[in-house]
Length: 315
Ligand SMILES: [Fe+2]
Image (cartoon, rainbow, N blue to C red):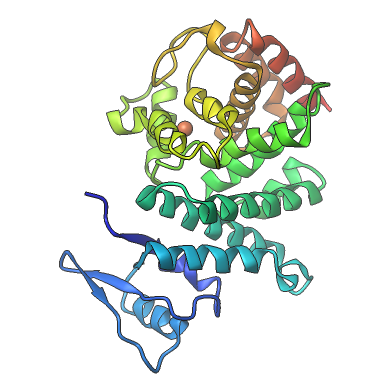
């Protein structure tokens, strides 16, 4: 049975002081949720105390989590977030905090408007920061170690996706948004340790558990319940994001004719960033990476996707 409360890492909440008045915080003690009573203390005082005791997670109801997401989105849209008093490192960290809480919400309760909006605002702000950097390399140098590697990769994937889509005459802001939305949502069901499992599996180094193998289908199933909030094109990309044209991908093992152009663009962009990360972001390896991608991602819609990716990378 799903928990009626959503687990939120306290460290994410600490970045947003003053936004969560009236939230009921619970902690998990010996398998039971304990509601904290704090009539004379602020939310932040409580969080500070919990952290000092070594407690990492707080638990909140769906309604309170909605309020938290709304408060976080408002902070990202506020004047103080955008003014020069907030360092870029803090700003990027805050966008990751918001994205993480939105994903935790979705894992607990499914998709709703507040979570979707929060994820969109976080991505929008992160994209502004990637674009402000003189290039991907400069962005990496500045922010590596300031947020999780997975978040860094998802920001760079979405940045690259937008650039690659820019090479197609039929592109539009709406199409770019739908594709980037897949980048935000595709791994919602994965937990921090799962990414390494996927990586090792894709390198042929280890087996993959059923839960991790099914993550694309699980996300799709969750999103299909809310088609009013999630475009179908986004869902298709997510379903296919670990598939390969030779049928050796997962979870289904579809073959070339099933991929559409948007999926192909997303997949090659995401694989490129992953391989670049494997090469410790050494851009001198970019030609080798492109070559190795061409060996797997060829034919049908992948030819045009690789052509566009190559021209972006060569710029
Ligand atoms: Fe994935």
